Length: 154
Image: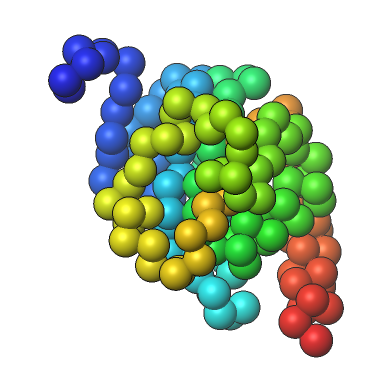
């Protein structure tokens, strides 16, 4: 509001209801900043970068739009990298440690309240910027992801 921007929305709602707020192709970019990483394997489907949610985002995103994830959770970061690879997403940026970059991009210098708290106690922030493919693979790929996660756990 301070910047007078009219093409930005902050929405606090259940993410699976996103398509009720935006028309198809209306959203150019989604930022997911410091979400609950849902660390238990039984809660993997609740991670905001799980394919279940990517399909929700795809309903409202413009082709070529971007999803941005900023997190202090190495588990969520690595999970998302696995999803990106399995589902054919295109990576635009992948920083394992944002604040170790020689030049931190301006948009990544903005710190959320949670980032300032350094909840993970790591002082390490991971960032991914990626695009969804024109069509995400179906539910059979979700089973492959599940098996992949189970193998990593064992």
